[in-house]
Structures are given as C-alpha cells and as structure tokens.
Image 1 (cartoon, each protein chain N blue to C red):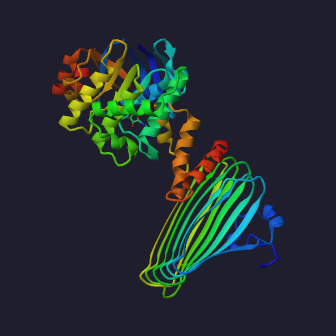
Image 2 (spheres, rainbow over the protein chains, first blue to last red):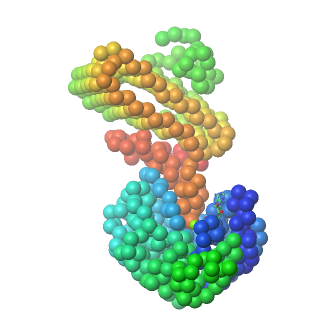
Image 3 (spheres, each protein chain N blue to C red):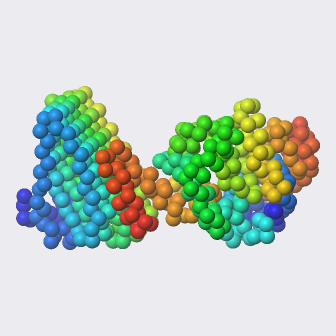
Length: 247
Length: 243
Ligand SMILES: Nc1ncnc2c1ncn2[C@@H]1O[C@H](COP(=O)(O)OP(=O)(O)O)[C@@H](O)[C@H]1O
Ligand SMILES: [Mg+2]
C-alpha cells in the first residue's frame, strides 16, 4: 500500500530524512520508534506535504499513486490521514463544519456524491461515541480549549469520519492517561484494522502497543530506518534504550 | 462642514484615497440621535462599484443603546466615519468588517466620546486585504473629565492575504477621568499557516480553507447583530472575489 524508497528531505535547508525506505502492505500495522529529533515527525509531515518540508530525493507511492506529486488536500483524498502530534486550533470554525467540508471535498475529489447534513451528523455521532467524545465537543471550534487527551481523541474521531486507507499517526498516545489510551487504542483497531487499510504508528512508548498489536517495528535514527523487527523489538527498546539496540 | 478637501496632514485622512474622495467632497453629515433610553440597531452595507464616503454623527442620550454594524464590501474607495457622543450609561456597539482587493482603499474612522459617567463602547473591526489593497482603521476613544465608570473596548484585527497588501490600524485612547476601564487590542497578520496545512491534511483545498478561516474572522465583527445573517452572506460573496 505504501512504498517509500530512499526518501530524502530537508527542513530549512537542513537534511533530516537521509534515504529512508519502508514498505507497508494492506492489512498491516507498522510502528516507528526513535529518539527525539530522529525525524519521525518530519517523515509524517513530508508524507502529508507540509510546506517547508522539501523532498530532495526518493519516492513515496500510495497504492501505486505518486504521493509526492500531489497537493496536501489531494493526498487526503487519495486516502492518507495524518494524526498530528500537536493538533492545530482553528478559532471560529466548528469541528462539524470543518469535517463536513473536509469529507465532502474528499468525496468530490474522488468523484463521489456529497453527504447531506443529516447523513454527516449521523456518521459524526457514531464515531464520537466510538472514541467516547461528547458530540457537543464537535460543535465547538476545532481543538480550541480541548485538553491534550481530548485533542488526540478528536484526531481519532476525524480519522473515523474520513475513513482513510493509510493512517500515519504521530505520537497519538502522548498526553493520554491510561483510560484514554485504551479508548484510543480500541478506536484505532476498530477503524483501521482491516484487510484494505494500513497504519504507520509513530510512538515513544511500548504501552500503546499493548492495545494495538503491530506487525512490524522499525527504529528511525539519523533520518533512516536502522533496524526492523517484530513486536518484541518495541519491548527490547523500552528495556535497553535506542542506543544499545540501534547501535 | 468645510468645502476644503483635507490633506494628508489631517490625522483622520492620513491614509485616505484623496483622489477618490475629491469628487465626493464635501461629505454631508448624517445625524443619528437617540433619545434617553432609546434602543436601535442599524446596519450599513456598502457593496457598490462607486466610491463612497459617509460621515455619521451619533448622539446617544442617557441609557440609550445603539448597535451599529458596517460592512465595506464594495469595489472602490470606501470611507465610513463615525463620531459618537455617549451620554450617561449609554451603550455603543460598533462592529465593522472590510474586504478589499486590487488597488482599493477602505477605511473606518471612529471617534467615540464618553461624555458622561457609566457609558460603554465596544468596537470590533476586522479587515481583510488582498492584492495591493489597503485597509485602515483610525479609532479614537475619548473619556471626558468626570466620565467615571467608563468602559471602552476596541478590538482591531487585519488579515493580509498578499505581501503587497497593507493595513493601517491606529486605536487611540484619551482619558481625562478616573476609574475608567479601557482596553484595546490591535493586530495585523496573515492566515495561520499551521491551520491551513491542518485543513489541507483533512482534504480541504487551499481556497476553501482560507475562506473558512476568513469567514470565522469576519464573523467576529457581526456576532449578535440583528442582521447577522445578511451581513455575513454579503461578506462571503465579496470574500469569494477577494481570495
Ligand atoms: N521547522 C523546523 N525548522 C528547523 N528544524 C526543524 C524544524 N522541524 C524539525 N526540525 C529539526 O528536524 C529534526 C527532526 O525533527 P522531528 O522530525 O520533529 O523529530 P522527531 O519527531 O523524531 O522528534 C530535528 O533536529 C529538528 O530540530
Ligand atoms: Mg515528533
């Protein structure tokens, strides 16, 4: 589903990704772990097409489509979802309006009919319930006044509504207490654990992996994948640290 | 009223488009007088092709309340000037939005005098400028001697859509009384790039994302207005062209 080959990217002219390769098949959940500053968020942003993250080499294909040739909103319509490490606040724009316009813009991009107001609200209610987020929160401006944990749950509600093929989730578990962690983990499984979908989970901690069982674990250091293993690699990293394991 | 056209040296005309103003000069003063305890809501929408200049003189009696909203959404020079004199415990709500593009100049000029104790004034001005357009806000709040318990608020923000667009904003306070609560905030900026990327990452195309943010921005000037929907609808129509 996702094929990243020798990807190189700079931020403010500074090389961050230095030849990163990674393949994810449909139905798989992959995890990326790595020290602070390794380039994990840079990978997520580069896949999403954030301005300022410049690709200087390599390729990234989503289901055979050249992701890097698309504008950010087209990447979303192609099936990419980015879970933000720091979800952005948008004053004055309600989640409901924001997500309805987002979903219908994606559907339009794919040549599908827009969802009516009623259909959309039904969908939103269902996904909010799945993540135990009060529907009233979605009537408020996007992320404004949300706690860290609420923002992360709202990210997952968005993922549920937008129904992507591939989710790249950047530290979705940070800022969550134990109960919220379970809710988010269950949400990821319910929404994304399907034969036609895939997940790239960026995390620092093994604890989310108790709920979301990965197929592969990769270590990202110095802008490259330096080690790949199964779920046991995450446990080993937690015990021994990045330096010992990835050296 | 003078027949002499103002010059750049006149503070209130510092950023005006004097060439566009010349044929409109002198500008007749429109008087709005509210008796003691009277309440009124008024909306001014400018959306035409021709230059406009208006001069409003507002007098609010004791306990009177005026809710005045202005939308500058026309295609040429537009200047709306408001002088307001507030009596005891009068309330003046002023919300204005401007949307300019091309070479256009739009301006809102206010002078609010708290002449007696306990009056409230709340001004909210939101301007959007694209292309080589200029938006201006010159707003003076004066609190007369003895006008204790005054509550004056100015919230002024401008959004520039292009590097070539300009916004001038000058909120001013002149206070000769004690026990006065006056606050002003003033900011000129660009649309939040982080917010725009967040929207794009969810599938919203750039133009639509900008429109959503600007819609929310402009709506702050019209919150609670009697004509809120009409004002917003007209603003949105113009927004589509400015973007
Ligand atoms: N906007 C930016 N400007 C300059 N340097 C940046 C910027 N964003 C990230 N970096 C740098 O890129 C490197 C990788 O950062 P990041 O991808 O956020 O790491 P991680 O998510 O793995 O902690 C770090 O050295 C960081 O300082
Ligand atoms: Mg990061």
